[in-house]
Length: 137
Image (cartoon, rainbow, N blue to C red; front, side, top):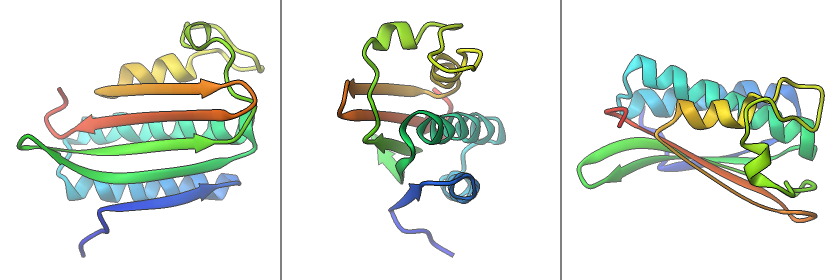
């Protein structure tokens, strides 16, 4: 079965995270991500989706199958309308947390995927984009 080229999932409760991760696994298989790269992408997606629930009361995630310059991969964009992040550099520092976490989520997710981008405006929300390429580079 062929998947659509992209799909958006609203993340408003824990069950939505489970659905998202299942769909990420399907997209990863469709573009033939290596098993280690699938695991890395799913782990990063889990962290980003749970961050949206914890810090922004939810949001939405769009999954896309990518094809660019003879490469294939999966791109996921997480968008929320939460409080935003006032200092992205600080938020990307391992050990920093505004909650009760270990402060490993954002920097850990960045290390897991091939491409990572974060944009945020206080009071407006946050957009995180992650990409994992088939070849893992």
